[in-house]
Length: 240
Length: 227
Image (cartoon, rainbow over all chains, first blue to last red):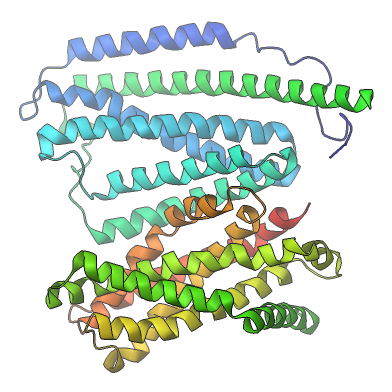
């Protein structure tokens, strides 16, 4: 497709890195280290689980933030279909990549916790199973992107897959919950040690900040890659 | 929905089914593959009669999924080979009729495969389908409708890519997990006489799933097919 720069909605000026990105990245990494240190130092070993409980500080935040990631994919996909601005597509792709990493991390950490606690690495529990299905759905999303070469087509197709995937989340969860359930009942802040709550909240923010940094960085790189691709194409067309 | 739109949908269904009827190559192959999968599951799970009968619902639906998925890409590939998709898109009228036409042609195709496959499964797995034919057909129809709805939608994308054979199941099967769970549970309950009275809730879940993704696909198809 030989459309011009303008028609394809590119900023012809160079993509610059947002000034907040690197300082924010440094901050979020330091915040993460601090949140981990504080929560590990503050919390006493759990009565039943002992030090194993501390996996909660990485498992639960990564699960929460992965849901935020897929919600971002959903919203930016919808925005892309409405406005057809390629930046929404690049943002959806960035959030999906980070979301897949976080989902995989959630599953890995959950398995490490599940083996000594439940006695098995894997169980067909609703939340665990839903997370695994989400991982598969968004791996499919990334695979579709990887196999689709035309940019406009990739953006439109990926947007529909991203929207359908998110629409499926509550249906998947309901169906698996009816199917069977043994997941640990969610604790509420009133039933656990206050230091656990502080540790969990700190780490939830730590993961959120890291998520914003990663997505921001990935989005910046995606825009650079895109500008490069468009320029190469322009040059090739000019030489003809 | 206007009369003109209905006749457009009808024309596409007729065209696709005629193309299929004249070659029959694909239908016959898919039917034999379905029979083969039923046999393979029997060898993998068997030969204990009770075990086979307990697994029958799951086996039946996995066979529908694994054999049916082969028909979706083909439904667009035959258009792409002759460049006739461009022609279809050039015709006046709503593009949704293309989707609906493909959807009902594929639905007919998969249901016809099931008409042969289910009696075969009844024999091989010793399940009493005749006494429960009405509820069983309801579940088959609802489950197949949801399956074909998403299959036809995703194949509109995957059929135009090099990696179509692997990409379609990769996109489609994770999305179908709620449908698979509901359909297998409902089928299993019905084959057992539905003593716990659970088939109804699973059927309602199937209906919700079908409605949501049918409407979703109907609205999103425009974005997928335009080029």
